[in-house]
Length: 367
Image (cartoon, rainbow, N blue to C red; front, side, top):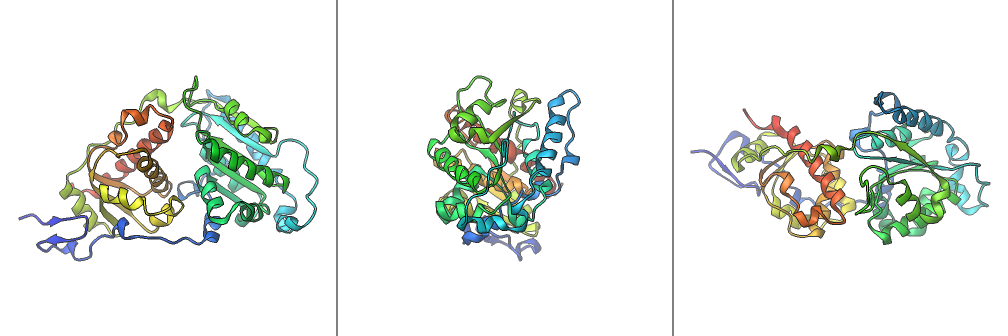
């Protein structure tokens, strides 16, 4: 009789792989100090090794090679007081004289052209200690403001030489105003900025070029950004990737128990648990995990749950953690209404990333 294993870790019968037992994401309740949120504002593990030299420009898209040259020069020019930490003392002193020209770049292009690769390469190439430059998504930046407060965030980041913001979200007016105000204060402190963004819903050519939307939404900050257009094929023209066929509950369970460092959870229970953990802690939630094994994957029931799942998918993808699942395939997670709504870009991204992680998990299943 085959061994029956459940996501709670209980088992009927005995087997060698059942003795150790996998972890459960639902049993994790990480508490992340505010200072750790700042220290962890670095390119995610997936982009640890990227550099301008590892970016391969498409020879048919000259703007890609031009972007590498421009960003390399931008990084080289980010010298000055911040390198010695003098920027931190500037909070209590007179603001420095602003440098001539834009102190920010906006990477403007569609999906799949390597904007995040280039943004992370800029962070790595900037001549400063890691503690004097920051890299994070728009959501991570708003979470930081929520944890530290606005003024403390300005003081903490004001001594940095560079702040990189990936996926600047233009679909939430309130957060856009908040972050724009924050960036205005940081520019006054001499911090250089670099950003990528999504696009506003319902725009002609959505998914390709968003510079006009971006510069309009950040209003007074627009003069500080130089748009840097990066042409290339829009991955949406190829359609959503086809998700691998789900495995059986038994296959997922056996893989969970056989894989050191894996977690094992029922998908509905995980969604409930995510509602109890602030999204700023999802990185800590996945810390030290080698694989995520899920049973009973079903379409998400509402928008709030869906947006939390998007953040978790981003953190899993950043950390290259494979996801093995039974139930519905990942391309059926979100309803047609969600995929046609204002947050559809996020849902498309989550499907693409979870699908990639599902493919990475193929090796966990015994052939």
